[in-house]
Length: 157
Image (spheres, helix red, strand yellow):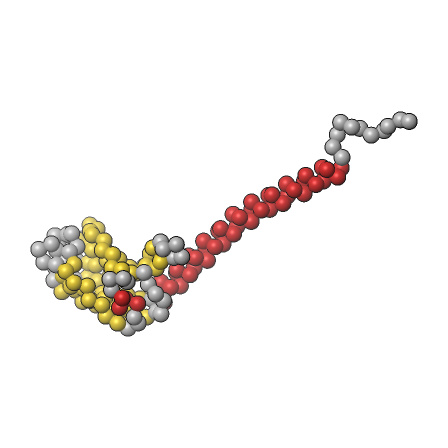
């Protein structure tokens, strides 16, 4: 009896199964990358919407905000119902940036109350003659990381 089969090559079935397996692996890799991009974009959109809907502004600054003459700052939350992580105050003197102060919701729980005023006392900007303070709110993501809003509300004094 003569055997016409070539025993050196792979059978068509095994080759087809290997190709299908490689396609599944490639699809899995692409899906992981696409899923991470989509989730990151959704997170950014969520933070952006919260930033638009929640506004905290400085309404009054009493004092010079220096080491010699600390100041008191009144912050007012005008809109929004989301729980904010806190507020960053950035002082500047002309074109020079200064001290960044973190005002957290743990220390000032009124920041999460709509239409309320919070008084921050004895603020030292670290500058000799600050002329502007910018208020930037931030939110905490699921892992507890701060997500700053892209826009700041300036207060000139």
